[in-house]
Image (cartoon, rainbow, N blue to C red; front, side, top):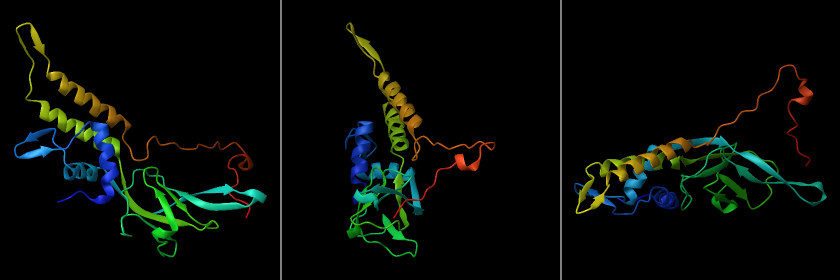
Amino acid sequence: MTARAGLSDLIQQLRGMTNAGTADYSVGTASFWDGDQMQVILDRHRIDVYQELLEVHPERKGGGTIHFKEYRSQYRNFEQTTGGTAIFVVEDVTGADSGTANWSADYARGIVTFAANQGGTAYLLTGRAYDLNAAAADVWRMKASAFAEQFDFSTDNHSVSRSQKIKNALEMAQYYEGLSGVNGANTVTMYRSDVPSDYVRPSNRYPQ
């Protein structure tokens, strides 16, 4: 079994976050961490996004015209699509697939950019987003478990503190756990009920 091709970049990033090679240590007959094992961890922290309405970010051009090319998801770290598969799909509200030839994607930031102006057309995204921080916390905890049998010892005026590896791994797990959440820090806009509505919400209309 081979890890899915669309996870290649995410697996590499997860390795960097966890200092995880392809054969760091063995448990029984299994060596850690190959691509399949990384994929299992990532899939534990996967959010299946289904027909999310993308937020359009208009760009003002010369003459006061507005172009609608950039569309953004609230999620990050998407699995990449390959060969037009149904892993990352952009479609209009009628359900028509826009096709990968019409746009490019920044999978890490969840941004879809069309080659041509879409005139404000609404688009929906279906894909798989991943919480890399939560996945990294899991990997560090498993590494700490693997270090559990190691012990400190002193001999001939020489001291080896192997238990520090467990402590460091658990601290890293706690660090990444604190950063976890696909959406990152969530924010909300609060409105005062005693403020006239004219001053509450700016217009969302853009000149054509």
